Image (tube, rainbow, N blue to C red; front, side, top):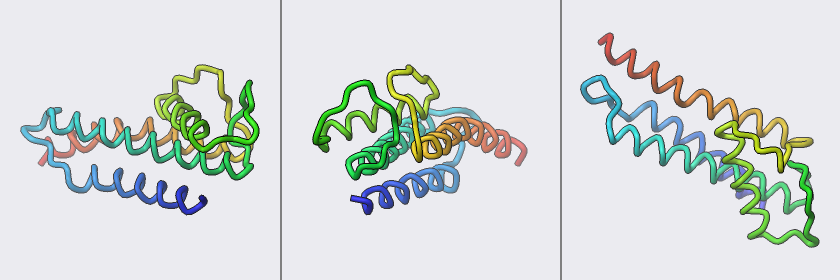
Length: 132
């Protein structure tokens, strides 16, 4: 199960790297291709971190505080909660129904930084391509 977490992290890092090394900004503006690429990137990051949260949770590592517990935790339930928590964290909405604890705080912090950095990096890339 921990292998799923490591694999997820590798996919996330590879997807982010791919966005900024391969995408060319056409005509120095935001295009449909860039939009679709961002949607896919955010989907990969959300699902990837969701799998990390679910894998840790199913292995007994508390990553978020919950109001209702199911014993024993089921894999589909943990994936659902993990992806939901990941999306809320990535987009920094923070509904308050799940709160990161323990290692989950650090993982959530990294995920939130990625959520903030992707749009900033894209703007920087567009700006840089305009200067060329």
